[in-house]
Amino acid sequence: MTNNLMGFNVADLAEVGGLRMMLPVEIDPEQLDEWLNDNADHARQLLEQNGALLIRQLPAHGSKKLEKVMSKLFDDSLLEYNFRSTPRTKMRGRIYTSSEYHADETILLHNENAYCNEWAMKIGFYCVKASEVGGATPIGDSRKIYRDIPADIRDRFERKGLLYVRNYGDIDLPWTEVFQTTDRSEVEQYCHNSDIEFQWIGQNGLRTKQRAGVSYLHPRSGEAVWFNQAHLFHISSMPEQHRHSLLDTFKTEDLPRNVYFADGEEIDDQSLDIIRQVYRRHEVAFQWQDGDLLLLDNMLFAHGRHPFSGNRRILVGMATPMSSQAPELKAVVSAV
Image (cartoon, rainbow, N blue to C red; front, side, top):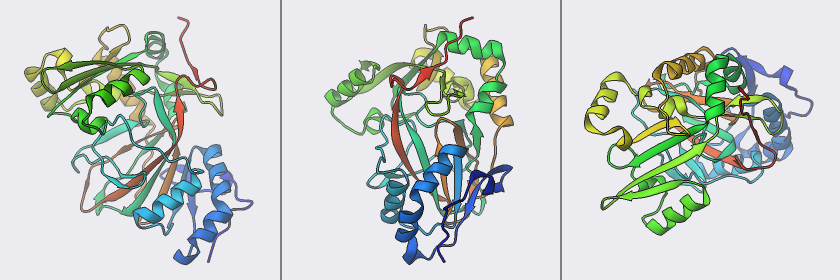
C-alpha cells in the first residue's frame, strides 16, 4: 500500500512527544520510488509549514537508498559536512553517521553549524537501528527558545555578537579531520573564504577564531530564532570534572574550544546556565523506531541526543545552503 499525501495538511499530522509532526506511512519497499515521485513536493511543503516532520516506517534502509530519498526530498541539494565540530563517518555520497560521541554522553540541543557563517537550512535523520534504551533525538523550537530567554541576556548577546575560538589537537578533533584535508594551503583558503582568522602554532597546531551572529529572522517566515552555539561551545558546558581537568591543563586561550563575546569579553557562566535551562524547558523527545525519517528546518528547530545503551544507528543528510551574508537573511541586533 502506498499512502498519498495529496490534501494532507499540518493539522492532520499525528502527535508524538507532545508535538504534532508525525506522518505514518505504509509503503512497500518496491514502491518507494513511486511514493517519492508522488509525494516529495508535498512532504517539503509540510516541512516548510511545520518546521519538523517525522515520516514513520519509511523503507529506506541502506546509505545508497537513503541518499536517493534525501536527495529527492531536499530537491538535490545535499551538502558536504565541512568545518566539522563532531566526529562522523561518511557513508556514501553526502550521507553521514550522526555524531559519534560516547553512548553515555548527552548532546545538548543545538542548531547544526550555528557556530559558522554558513549552514544547512534542512537536515534529515534516518533511524536504521533504534537503541535498546534511550538514544532519543530531542528537538526544540528555536522561536520559543528565543522568546523565553530573558530580554536582558538576549539583548546583550545580540548587541555584542560572538567569537568562537578553537584549538585543534588530541583533545578535540584534529584540524585534518575538521577541514577534511592534510594540505595547510587548503585550510588557509577555506578560512580566507569563510572570514575565519587562523594561526598555525608549533609544528602541527592550529587556532581559529570566527565571529558569528546570535539571532536571525527566519528567511521564509520572518520569525526571530535563537541561532548560535554559545551554550554548547563554552567551557562551562563541560561536566565539572572534565572542565576542571581542562582548565588545569590549558591556558584559557589554548582550550580546545570556547566562545566569547565578539570583542573578546568573557561570557559569564550564569547567563549561559540560564540559556541552557531555557533549552531544557523546550525540549521535546520521542522514541525512535526503525525506519523513522525526521526532517527539520535547521533554523526553526534545534536537536540533540540522549544517552543510550545497545546498538544505535542514525544516518544524517544536510541540505539547502544558507549564509549569514545572504540578502534574504537578516540578523537581529539589539538597539539597547
